[in-house]
Figure 1 (tube, rainbow, N blue to C red):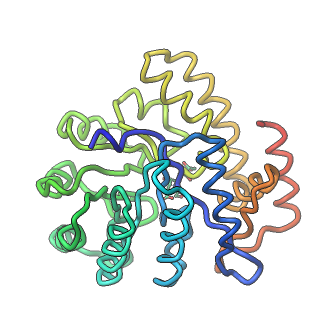
Figure 2: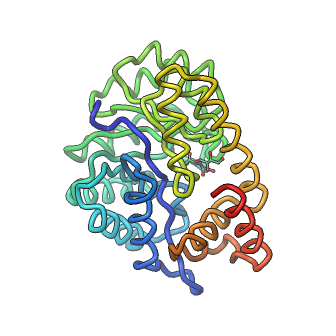
Length: 291
Ligand code: NGF
């Protein structure tokens, strides 16, 4: 599992005026992440990829584009989770055949699934393929909170190698680090990367790394080297940036900032709104302020 450690951008997808995937724009976002942000990998099909608003065919096409553009230059993780378990299994097989280094799956959401159902979901997905799985835990969007004991039960399956931990519960994070020294833990909140790194995460997966990947790596590496004050200074600048981004609209603003760099990151998918001229103008100011 050590091969999977590092900094991953949660990949954005470029959509055109009609809400269709813009393949060329998406390829440019991928190249920008590899060539300029110097990420170790991409997390494809996550929240940032607007995945839960897409059809199965669209998801497959994006997985294909990412693999075709990145080849073996970086690591690729495919988020295949879906409340439609048959779709999740189909995508797990599809991305494993494409050569994805690992798959990931969000906890099943919307219905109040009990833990036995959640466990069945994960084991069904990963036991259908010859691959490894990273749990995607994001309680603030899914409403699913799992305990230390429940994570331990999921981790009994050796093919479940880690978790993307998008939560601010640092007590649980510390307990997980101690309990599972050999599982991979990825920090999911970019604004809390420094404390998460101090607690020993193996890497981070973030939306803002699509534009702020260089600072993100600095925070991660400085903190790992024990240079906490230097790391804190960069986290401060980063969080000024993230506050401005969140205030103007998360994915819209990151996409509009990428446009400032000549990357055709495009629009968001409905029901998300189209980026307004005001939002684009503000994104331009934010870009100028931090880069
Ligand atoms: O965008 C979200 C959810 N979370 C991302 C990150 O966890 C990636 C995080 O970077 C992710 O969840 C995914 O794409 O699957 C935040 O955007 C960032 O910390 C700003 O709050 O809202």
